[in-house]
Length: 343
Ligand SMILES: NC(=O)c1ccc[n+]([C@@H]2O[C@H](COP(=O)([O-])OP(=O)(O)OC[C@H]3O[C@@H](n4cnc5c(N)ncnc54)[C@H](OP(=O)(O)O)[C@@H]3O)[C@@H](O)[C@H]2O)c1
Image 1 (cartoon, rainbow, N blue to C red):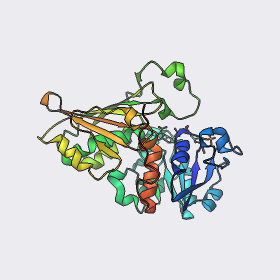
Image 2: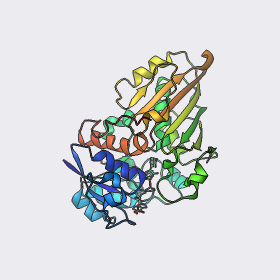
Image 3: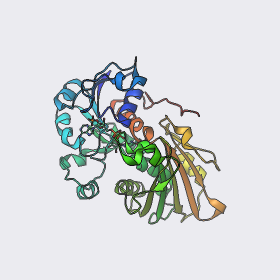
């Protein structure tokens, strides 16, 4: 049984980690942190965890984490894990960061998009990008895992088969993405108020979103060359879920359905739907699955990929647990055998 710490356990991804790890046969949460809720019972703040979790939130203390944990998840805003990672790694503790601190290989690019100086840039080269469908082998020995963002997961899984096969024009991709409001986290913010986010949809960060450099880096890895992409995120009036509608121009003939099915036949958390399908975010709500469908409208040269995922699970906490399972040699699906909620 490994001992797990969760820094930022009062946030949406943190409480999802707690919920899913409560069913894990090989992992037990031993430390949960929150600066604002230190001293409070977890089950007092989250009655959904009554009878499941008897821990008390504590303030963030890297020494306490190192002494009581084999692995620590950072479910915190960016520019948090980068201050603690070195101390934990030095004491043999694995770090799985759900934030962006170690996702981008180029320090200057990261600093430009996140607006702060990186506090432990020397650790960036040893971080492994936690997308199992690309980096499973590297994750098995990684001490520092940088989990992908929610949009980047759906966009990369959607485009990957086409980029690997070299059958699309990688210079002009389009990702039109929609996210539920939980993507913004649990902090109080006007844009997340019911009256501001319900019954309406709008695009944001059209000229450039922080996930853009991560998406470009990840797609470039699949393509083996630099890619060009227009990425437009939208806020939609739902609590969870991401829908990514992806467009590319075909440059070679290929059986798209067969290509996608072959690429993901061994991936337990990527579901390629039958030809002609339109996956709904509802079908992955609460599960670690990214569900895909591939289309070629009117038999033309535009390929359209539809990808849905739960932003809090395959887009965050579920994928982080999947990485933990791979790193510690557990069954990859342990704690993650969750079927989407219906309705
Ligand atoms: N929400 C999503 O769909 C999603 C998807 C993929 C990735 N992510 C990433 O995952 C991370 C967590 O997201 P979230 O949505 O769960 O955030 P959240 O709901 O806003 O929760 C943030 C948590 O971090 C703690 N925290 C904040 N600042 C801290 C600091 N300086 N030091 C220590 N703890 C701090 C907060 O508790 P206290 O302030 O009480 O300490 C809280 O528990 C973010 O980096 C986010 O970008 C989120």
